[in-house]
Image 1 (cartoon, rainbow, N blue to C red):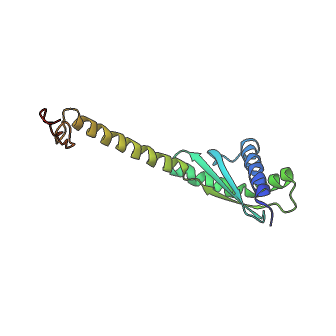
Image 2: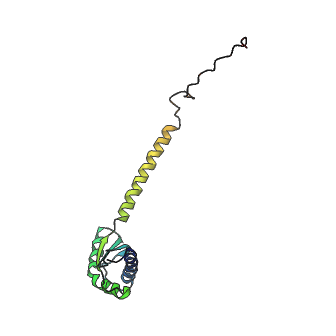
Image 3: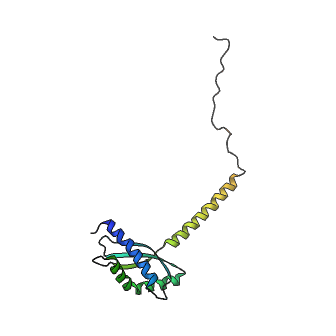
Length: 148
């Protein structure tokens, strides 16, 4: 079992190697505009999960996934050459859900902003429900001037 720091270093290196190899060596026309977003390596350094995003529609996603699967051997060979580890990890590609999550968060923020605008519009002409000073003030008993 390797330590966590070594796994993180290897993951960062794999991310760079895969991104550069996709850009320079892989000439598959099915491969769209792919961005490697994250890499996670298991504790024993035998498996690497590569998260990626693809610019485009659903068809571009499926074509890019097929291109990545067919290029997996070349990518693994390049990772082995450039990392220098004893056992080259197996690669698994997973489409990252970051863009969809970001779109959902943006939509929720737009809804919250619209709701805030409605509350602000309703509060413009409103007044308080009670008195201006809602606290009860007991009047001080007046001192009689004749007693001393």
